[in-house]
Structures are given as structure tokens and as C-alpha cells.
Image 1 (cartoon, helix red, strand yellow):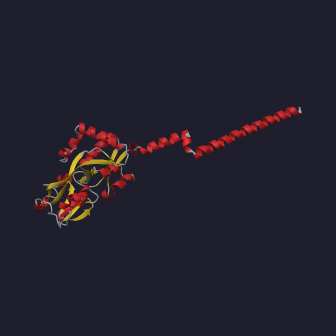
Image 2 (tube, one colour):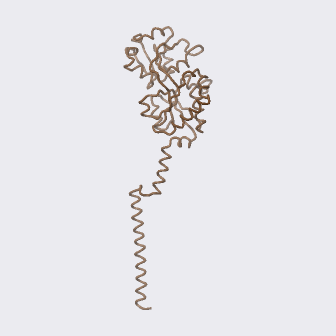
Image 3 (cartoon, helix red, strand yellow):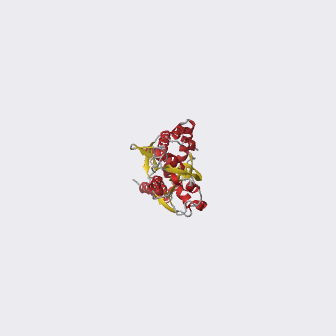
Length: 295
């Protein structure tokens, strides 16, 4: 073999090593680039986009786990126990909507004061409990179209009903309302100071407790939802000696609250419209003497 032939083969080997080195170097540079700039990797970016979309879809999250956790408190005629079984207008309403969503309803009692925290933490998926629609709540949560009309009323002993319909009659009296409720806002509002401004206001755990306070005489009056009044008072109830005062405050509407930006809201609105159209919602409402209150 000549020296030229050996030199030629040696040169070929060197060129091969150089090419391999360049490829390896390019691989290192590209890997380093995609690591430093993850958005530049189209495959990784597409995978992350799909993951993010799934995480952002509340509907996909709820349907994926197969249930809708509904945050409630106990008050008639919306959510209450009868013979040990949870029943009420919103219980039946919730079941009907969940059937259309293809998920199981799971009703979970919550502290009304902590409702928004529970929702944001995903301990519940919605607040479906006679929630009054307000601009402040619409800023913080995604709220369905209104499904029921309501107002705030005073509940007291029957013998005081006529007197308490007059401004100033509650001066020095003890007035209770559910903490963080719209009733509490009314009782503490400057707009209604002529009625409640000189009363002694006390917050209680829920509307049921508010009624019990008035019945026992530890409070003179309660500010609660009208629908609770018509569902809880009257002949055969535990509060036959109580009455609704012929004076109402702040006409309002109920809605279902979901997490801010939730895509469940639109789907639930569609389900509600279908239940209205086929008469199901009206039938449920009339069962609980709420047919006239539907929005």
C-alpha cells in the first residue's frame, strides 16, 4: 500500500469524525435551545396547550369525574330533610339538570360564609342554594341566568306583624339574619336605616337558625328570603306562631354560581331552558308552592 493511499484513508476518517462532531454539537445546541425556550418546541407546546385547555374546561373536569358537587345549606323549601332524606325544590331541580349533563349530583352542606372559598378550592363545583344575583357576586363568580324571583322580608311573631310593618317599630329590638346573606346586607344597609338602623343586629349561622331565634323569643324579628318564609311558615309547620310582615325589601333573583370563567354555566343555562320548555321546572316548583316565583 502506498503512502498516498494511507493518507487518503486517514483523511477520510478525520472528515467522518468532524461530521459526527458537528452533528453532536448541533444536537446539544438544539436541545439547550428548546430547554431554555420551551415555547419554541412545537411538539411540547402542542401537548402543553392540550393539557392547559383540559385544565381550563370546568365542564370537562366535572364530566370527567362524573359528578357535580353542589354546595347547599339546609332551609325549606329549597334543601331540607324529610324522613331522613334530602329533598326540596333545589334538590329536585339539581337532579334534573345533572341528568342532562350526564353526571351525578352530590349535595354537600357548606358554611354560607365560606361559600366562595369552597368554590374556588374545588371542594364544591357550584353554589346552588338560593343565591341572590348581585353585581359583586357576578364579578367574583360565573352565575347562571336567573331562575327564581325573590325578595327580603321580616318574619316575627304573629302579634307583632302589623306593628313591624311600620318604619321605626324595630328600634331597640333584636333583629337576626344569616351571616353573609342578602338579608344581612338589608339589615345593615343605609338604604333601610329607617327600619333597621336603630335595631340590635345579630348574625346567625343560617336562615333556619334565624327562624328558631324568633320562635324562641331570643330575637324579635328575622330578615330572610321570601321563598323561605312561604316554604317554612303556615299551618302544620314548626312555625305556626310566626308570620311574614306585609313589607318587603329589595326585589332580587336567584342564580347558580360556578367558578369564574367556567364553561359549565352556559351548558347549565341550556339545560334550564329545556326544563322550562318541557314543563319539568314548573312542575317541580308547584310541588313546593313556588310556581309563581319562577323567573
